[in-house]
Length: 62
Image (cartoon, rainbow, N blue to C red; front, side, top):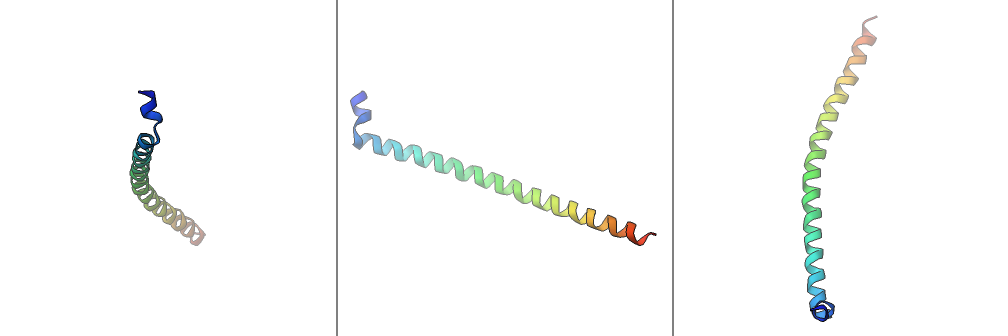
């Protein structure tokens, strides 16, 4: 059984399969994080507009 795993003809497809699984996993993680980053960036942009507007109002007050 050990000789079968160390055989290059068997080892290469196994390595390619593992690599494909890793790449698919990374792509899935990137998809989910990109969605999270988009929602976070839209939230932060709305927050920054609020912080930009509030000092302007206080400056015009006095």
